[in-house]
Length: 319
Length: 279
Image (tube, rainbow over all chains, first blue to last red; front, side, top):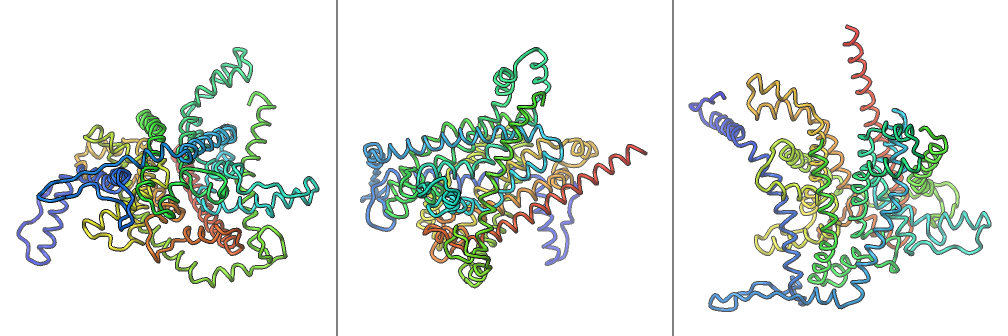
């Protein structure tokens, strides 16, 4: 490494030597810096907030600013008073509404995940098996909606599903029905919305997995006399399992905490935990209960999240 | 495929799937030219809702704020995400690696309500103890967006680095370049397309976010999704259809340009390859 001139005239020289010192420092310590900057950022803005949420979930609601009791209080003469209440969690446990909402969220996200898989799997398969140009066109068509606004894609379905909406108008004009079918503000609308907006998240991991597979195995199975259905269940399905799991988790986890879709398409009729959390916080201004709802939601999702991380790290090691 | 019936099934599902993805958006565009105030009832062709949209000062302000947040966010997320991706792929084992990987993958799937709530509570706590941030708005939204978008950039960089041949870096090393020089002169230029893709993704994610922004924003700071949401909560609005049409148009043009550039690069490379083979 070239040693920079130490004896240069100030102030321009000072600046120069400062720069070179900085450069030298960077050259020696760059590995540490490369790691430290994003690590510190995530520790402060991603990990630390969860501990604050946990702390507030163990406080009591008061009408004040901030609207919760402090965990640590200095009473007098240096006596520290630590107050932890689990009332909020007990409240979640005892109130039927919350248990029902959690279960309903899990039900809606599971069914939506299966629906996404049923639509997405054949599509991913068709994209992989298409010829070169078609493959790129189809992939672009699948990715394109992802770049447009999520909110506006949900809004599009409000127009389709409303009582006075496109689908009802069309069916009435065709004489299929006389009175509009109620679709907006029902669980059906929520399913449609989730499948519609999360479909690319299912197709892309499936595609990434399928593209790496050795498809001659299918021909081998056929040559050995396996029927297509047998080949599918004994060869194709097991081979594509990593893609199925990754795609399903990418749909299931965020869908469980979804707020916008149940709010805009489900109205007041579909209970989902993301909406309850949002309302506890913003409408009821009950921060401790909102925090407890968030912690409970995290507990429900921590296993699928760890599974997803496990798959991701295995994936990056193998490649 | 070996079986005609099967490929017929595949073509049908694919067409159905693509139609499912696109028909709602096409209808959104068509109804933006509807004269009638009631969105799904056709009342004749008109462009008046575009006029209504452009006259609204609120809309322009929201667009301005959203673009500002998205640009600053994308730049920081690209830098932090690239560093994180480098650390993950090239540093082997280090202390806290599991925690670091966890913090990179978790934001990809974390429900937005949780991220939003926890960041808001962090900002409130920070204000209480160190007096910063004194007001919520541009800064807090941008920090929140950087936190989740850098994870996406890190994943892009990670997969690019993993798929990149290391022979150029090794050659530079063999010729006596120090690791830092190799990083600056070889690795980063090779990563540039991935960084650009990461920048674009971070930019889009930021423009798209409603939940996290509405948690961490303060009075007066209204991003475009927050504005759209406050309007469509009350029902269908033709001016929002007009806005949607403009957004879809901008995105479609952007993606087409990107695809065209990529296509040309690919052709160029194929041409060079075939020419070098001839020689």
